Image: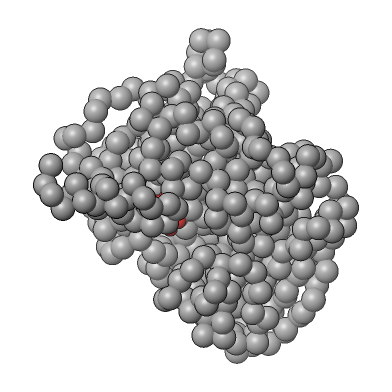
Amino acid sequence: MPRHLLSLLMISALLVGEDFAEAQQKLANYDESKIPPYTLPALLKTQAGKAVTTADEWTHMRRPEVLALFEQHVFGKTPSAATWGKVDFQVTEVKKDALGGKATRKLIHLSLPEHPAWAGMDVMLYTPNGLGKPAPCFVGPSFNGNHAVSPETDIPLSTRWMRASKDKNIVNNRATEASRGSESSRWPLEMIIDQGCAVASYYYGDVEPDQAEGWKEGLRAVLSQDGPATEWKEGDWGAIGAWAWGLSRIADYLETDADVNAKQLAVIGHSRLGKTSLWAGAQDQRFDVVISNNSGEGGAALMRRNIGETTAVITKAFPHWFTKTYVNYANQEAACPIDKHMLIALAAPRPIYIASAVEDTWADPKGEFLSGLQAEPVYALFGKKGYGVTEQPAIDSPVGDAIAYHIRTGKHDVTDYDWQQYLKFAKRHW
Ligand code: GCU
């Protein structure tokens, strides 16, 4: 082994969390020919071995099984509604002339009256003015809060814990005035509004800070019957499950807002939040369009392809994202009863878009493509078409019908190009 790799290995052994993941990016395999052979778990066969041949059998027999497998082995089970009880929505601001008069901006504080220990979450909603009908809406979590998503400077600054970032001007794990708009390139609000669509977002850290011990200060501890001293058991929900829960609570609110058509909700997320949008879309069928942007390992990428990030790396760097069981599949992917084509299939027959970026090799673009391809037999049961191709398309050449895909020029990010495709895709289905 070259000496620089050896020293990287030794350094990375001492690292944790994001730093560990970053060090591993330099050590990972990026060579297709070095991926050991694998067999994907059968999608259209029940756990008892019965072949699934109709949409009805998928919906009533196999789908519930697959969902339960993801709960048990990957993301954990979201508690029942009785656990959190009533959800309160308080509209704290309505600004009718937002974005130069194009939109109405609302801020909504969402809380759980039966669980006051949870500080709640602040949803930001932009709806187009003058549309004359309730707008379809994109719903997605943000990495840095409403003030970072919007270019408007009159939004309350989030006071919650945030991951350290010099780029985003996060100081002592808190946003600063200089953090305003730091995520706005990923949320082209005017473009979305101009297309007659609404956008609703919340800061994922409102539900739970994104760090290994974050659950102690988040919703999971508050809802845990044993209080914050709980050790998470196999099958209990992880942080991705909690963040996805937040997206479903936004859907609850949108059902009460006359400016939004709550029958037309696209759930969208990038990277770790793309894993989150896939899981939210799998569990909550009110999201009638599902979008995964560069979601990678733990998201759309097939876990059995050992290229880029692996199960071993993600469960070591980010153990809190998943249920405790998932770590058992580090270097043991073949033993896992699911792979990510099954996560895509959980969206069926609803339209789903999977997007990659060519420089985002850590996320395994080809593995993201293949999961959609392998989910096609489930869509076919509903008479729905998938990609229409069997090989990854050329760069910047989107393909697909009910399952769509593109690989864009550039790096791990959300760009205007991505949004242009999502808008076209969602509007085609709405
Ligand atoms: C890390 C992690 C990825 C994740 C990404 C992100 O790179 O290894 O799994 O998708 O962070 O969320 O930005």
